[in-house]
Image (cartoon, rainbow, N blue to C red; front, side, top):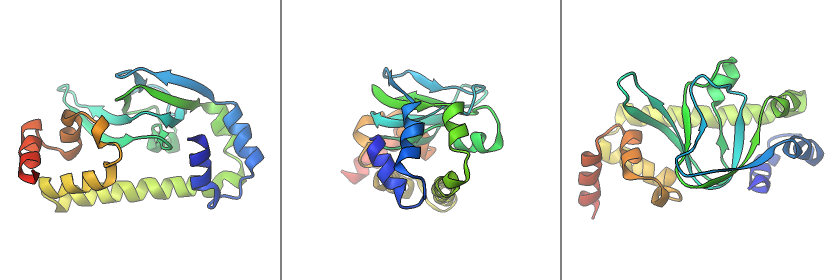
Length: 188
């Protein structure tokens, strides 16, 4: 999946293969158990990973203990608190393994290596992708009803859906698990 990530962004950045490999060689292979937390609020946002195998979710917890799922990630995707990283803040989000995961984890050293000018187009592309994803999600919450948001979720995450518990799909959609069950029955 590192190769998949490299190929995905190779065309948008002038970074040589050697520079990519230099960063990757300092990253560590790590396994996460199902339910294991990769990142918690208050921890350094300079911890990130490329998912090699498995599915994770980014989520927030309210003062009342209620969880709100921000997004899901699968093989070839990045794990990390990207917005906080850009702002120099600690993480505000939890990142949890929904399945057993294998990741390639990096930190401050790799980010420092990627702070050279040849990496700027990659960072710009990542920021653009992040912005578009956030803008689309905001639009859906403002304009779509629950059924339409669910349809959009299925279009976005159909490759991961079988691994995501329904209760987390419901928190992603901003509805109750019972409302999600009714949507599923209406589709059947």
